[in-house]
Image (tube, rainbow, N blue to C red; front, side, top):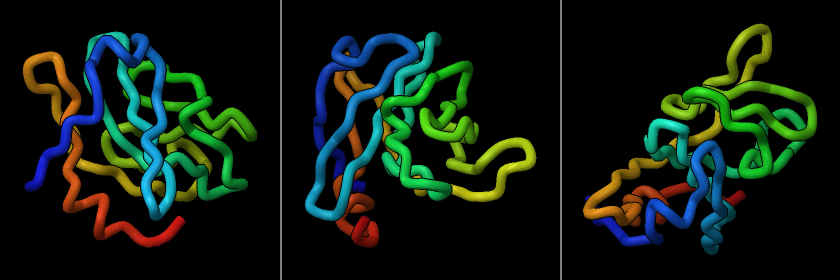
Length: 110
């Protein structure tokens, strides 16, 4: 993997998110209350809602537009909702958030 530094863990509030803009669309990087970090497409497949503006609870995020809930690890919609968003490899190293640049380059246009 080709890891790139996208910022400090402390730059994202617990149970919050930040958006990384790429040439092919935006990626939402989430931090849970337990300091786990996840990266997903920032676009709900239902109505295109910005997941980065959703509510983070546990290891899930709720879309701010229509309350679809997504698993942060898999990108899969939970409950009766059907859909999935792409996930991206991410890790924390020395307090810095690292994202796989190769995976970002392979993603389809948003």
